[in-house]
Image (tube, rainbow, N blue to C red; front, side):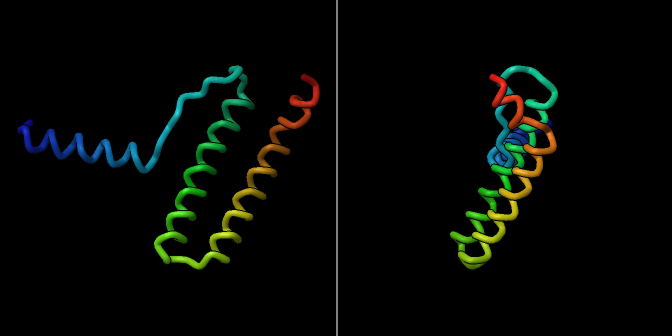
Length: 91
């Protein structure tokens, strides 16, 4: 592989890591917690994208607000479905 191709691949890898940040899970290793962490990271990514669209003027503030409300409602459904609230109350 030439130096130019290697540089281009490294640059693309950095751009992808910047667009899709990932942080390793550092909590209590239970399947429900790990799954919720995955959904939470996806929620964060989508929320950032909505904010970026609103900041750039691609969507209105009202549309961004509505999309964020929908994302939050989905997160509440996921939390309820995984029964995470009950586990927090027990601790």
